[in-house]
Length: 283
Length: 283
Image (cartoon, rainbow over the protein chains, first blue to last red):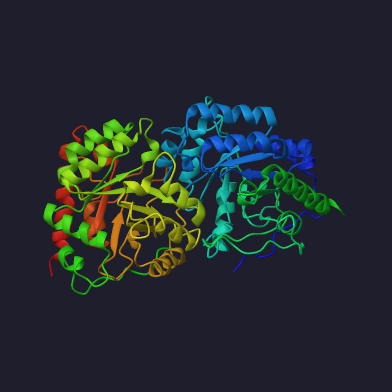
């Protein structure tokens, strides 16, 4: 059902070493550098009810994350003024902005969805993601809205969704293999994958993994995340995602923004993610 | 590369007959009825630069279509006031509103994207579409925003993207088969497919096909649509889509909204689509 065991570096390289690998995407290099300097491989997903709540949460948790992942289309109070506050926070706390749009249409349409509309995603997001399902035209369309094709854009990179965390996903096996082929055809734009396990042996490629949750802080930990959300989501711990499965960045949403003390939880996930990375580096 | 030849009704049923088939989704029934009464199997895709332009185009072409397909997230001037104008036009000209959102995330996220945000899609769209890629949780999430689960919603149906019109799409073969299985598990919500050929022998299921284009009105017609858009889109004629491939509704975008005379072109596509349907009905 799942692909063959993920290829592993014989010698595990540090984020710092990987940022120096030949052909590493400039934005990936920046992310590797942020991870090393902040000691964080944590991406916070801020699916709060309002954009105002998200901005407050990002102001509080910004110091502990390397990346902030948004779904701007869930916020009723979205405005371009608040986008400016978002990019100001990104500079202040030194993280990158990842709009988790999961583009999934033909090239001509995603071009319009990414550049235009109310959101103007390409003007403020550093990276977006896309499904490989429509074929390579989706990357041609999106790349036309990004640096260097569009010098006015902030957007410069894209992640392909090679696997998903949800139950019954069809993004597996041969589909995952075809994502890799599509990424190989768009090296200047595709910087890595949304995936559940390391799928590429290119040290410059980022592997970013959603569906991450720790047991509650007061639970007797057996190191396992438990359960789902009743809508198909399945959870893993930072230890499993980073040390066992060989991914690079953990994405945590409800584990932080629904916590009684989101800042404390962000620090807990930052520490757990970094400890898993340190463990992986051990020979 | 493509699935086995599509199943065909031994006796081709009329739209009217199919609206009476057991288990036919109420919204599909309504669409079949509109198609018969307006003699139109044409869905116009209004990917204009602004929502204001789209409203003008819909006012002009509304009499000739059974369905209007939108990408609301490409319009910089989107407002809920204009949505009200859109639904008013839908009543006036008797068509249904299809937001071509191509939802493609986990259940919890699509629930928020469909119900909330700036767009509040579930409050005004009659139907949406979704990729099967994330697994069945995506349908659970979307159905929770729709009639009958949410009585305040206008949304009541969903199409699964079983195939796509773009070059190199991975939505084919086994993927298409799995879409059908997922649809079977959500009969009250899934009303049919976005597809390139008839894939279901359930007479209540709608087969809606994008990427439709006629040769220019002044061309010596060989009955073939030609070329693509340079971003992977591939075109077919109404004759191929309806009569040969057994689909039900043609989706036409640039062929109409980029034409010098969009109203004349809408009528030409309406006639071509209806003629192909009449041809298919011939024993």
